[in-house]
Image (spheres, helix red, strand yellow):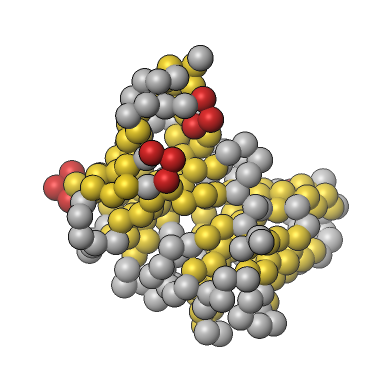
Length: 112
Length: 115
């Protein structure tokens, strides 16, 4: 059973488009996260979401918005995609804000 | 704000040799420390973590790490490397008193294993 899953695995799109990446966890965790990994493998937190409390990394453009329909899902919506958005996006979850985070397999986004 | 430095971008070791990957962190209080491994094209897998207590922690796949507060370090070690250990290794720090516990990652160390 996959603990943290993401769809799609690959996403190729044109500049200016709007796209969403879905994340689901079946671990019963309360907190979910989104990370961005750039071409140099540098990982950076984007959002943390716990009990409807959203904490945003201040460097994240407001074109990015997380949406959580329920506790098991945290989707990432991106408006007006730019070339620099090309990266691998990882979803993660943890039991609480101080517990180990478990990562999904990543979504490789390429903006042309 | 916390930060993590992994001084070695690449490391090459021979199969069967010992391994130490360095990690230095900067954080004002007691940190939560993690090591993750990422195989090519894969997600991140937790190797081990330190929250409190014994400063030498054991992880999966024969890895261990030692928390040294005086040196602000959390180095990862393995006594005998296997070819399957070739991957990217990330050290991360989580702020225990941060409401979001958003992890800060180091830049990663790419491990290559020679036969």
